[in-house]
Image: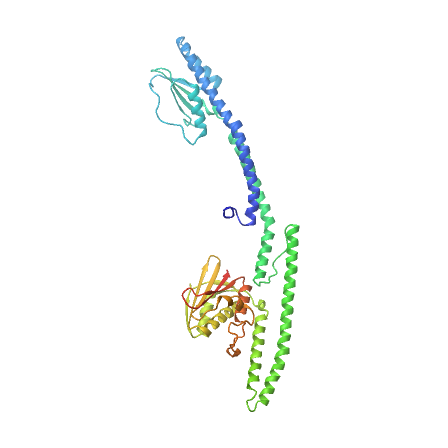
Length: 436
């Protein structure tokens, strides 16, 4: 559950580590401020305004008897800023509801006014941007209107506090994002370089940067890469020497056999030498330095279609979109597909190929209706020179390296190869998946 919620990338996890304490601090500080300052201050201001209204209502009858009601109204206007007017023509209070359920300030005003003002009243917090309107029914013929300045009953420190607690946090958060991004970028570049190297892309664009630990990891990665490249180079040079040293005596043996084989009594020996030459050629192809080929972008669907049209004559059906652009070594991918189709043609009558793209993966399925491969052999057939049928002669060009070459090519492109049962019935499915 938590793995699905939390981010997976290092950048966003680092940001979460930075953002979470800031948000928690703001919640705690905001809660303390709201409870101890904003809420209590506003409630006290509203209570004070309600008491002033009650004081006016208590003094008004006495001043009215002495015809000095205007004097009392002017005193209130001068001292407290409350504008008071007598509306004798109004005989009842409005019945419209002005309290919004989502406004905490409306609830504070309603609670304090309901508790303090004993006369029937009606208030409108949204009368205008400057005043709160309060209508109090004094008697059946008089309604007194109070226009209370909002600055008198509402604290403005809440907005200032929210501004000061939010804006600096956003600024610091933005600065943190920039610094975190710069610190994480070398790690991302190192992982991308390792991924490219795993796919056989030996580029030299990677530059060591970042913190001391990241630089150390980058230096070690470069050392490892050089050692692997040196090993590949040594292996290529060794195989070239083996090729020269073994082919020369084999050629001499073939020539001597041709000279001595007048009565065709040495045909079996000749076949053994031919088989040995096949094995050497296949092994050299398998162990050759395939990484020397350039990486290019090409339409893998078109490559497979051209391969089918030029090299294979059996019944092969293909189902795929018109274009699937893939980045890799074109000749190696062609050889990989050709090896699989060659194996299928030896044992099956019908072959079907399907290609599709699932998210960032290209999936190629090659199905046949042959006898298939038993489950105990599906992993072993990828071993060099392993053959399911031990008694089969090498005359059919099968030396047990076809699937080993396929797996080597697929792995060099960062993909996977699986041998499955044909879901449509009898036969084998070879499933290739390549990251695109």
